Length: 519
Image (cartoon, rainbow, N blue to C red):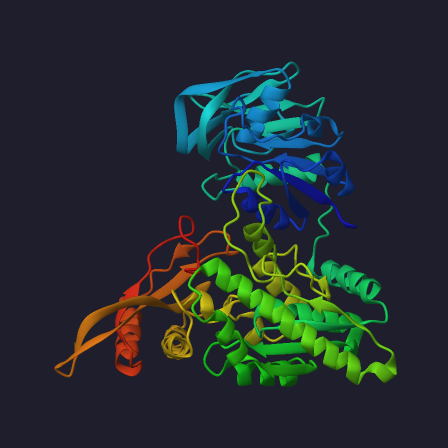
């Protein structure tokens, strides 16, 4: 990376990705590594500063995250947050013990000593706490910089350029958290605020040209924001040596196969090969009910289709001496995070087809130009590329499509049911002017039948769940309080128009504890 980088070592906190997001809001690049990352891996990023995240463990536990304490002596500024404060205290000779009064939620902190980290901040601040342990004795060279009525809240060793806070500056509940993080990144670390869409586009285009050389690439196009932006980026780098392949996997939204082809060719000028492989995918999915297995089957089948199409392209262009060697995917940072345990001690949540479903013997080499970005950052990149809002403002759609919105077996009949129900949801959300205000809104088909009555006739049909969430980046989400009038219209239309569904329910689960998609 040829820009300033802040490395965040993740000890398993639910807020770690929020730290990365906040830092990027200063136009400073941030990257999350597991706390177990080697010193060589950390050094390779040439960090301007290092942040140690929070985490659920206690530093004195036998299975406490095994980070290398040498990260504290790499010669760059260090900021510990929550568990990070305790890690610093414990490994530099202080003492951490269970707190007699645990602090969870809102708290008030008083700044009691001058410290660069707190410069320009109020002497009293409302913050968000989440800890059961506390620093009882500080390491040599550290001073108490802030405290609550119960515990140490901030410490500093200006000489060694190490600071730590017990609260979470990255969450919105901490009123002046952004200013504190900015003090660390900009004032203390001296990071340049050059992580901009224009800079990203320039460096990414140069990197792709160097990667591909005279070769040919194909792009797995879905019509969504991620793959579309990835395709336009790569097309800017290698021109007509990019062929986009749009696959009907049998679990697309209603009329999506025709709509996407038209948009990509006419709206973006991309070279698109459309492959109708719906029957092929549904055959592979027959009898499968496990969500992970569905994702992996679809991921493997996608790559198999891409391999077949790449061979055809190579044969057709053999006279030009071109080699099809690259596969472009619109993988995003949340896909990577949720598919592999980069959280240090945290768990893999689910395998995304872009990340966890790829076969080990895949013939094509990957280009993932958006792998380090969050969704809102991808949209900003797309705007700088001159892409229309019609594409950039589309709500996220999962790679495995409706397969992960059909609980239980995926069949052609059940896909058709969900396509009709989903079309009602999207059209009514748009009609109410809510499409751009919510992160995602869609229907889910449940493997549950219930008794109903229509026109004095008894029915026994499926249940449909409506899901609508508000989010900034997809890492956390709250259920959206849709107006009752909108829910009433959606429910009435689905039950009346979609034969096979006689009951509609609304999902009011946030993420966490749930995920946005049901599978």
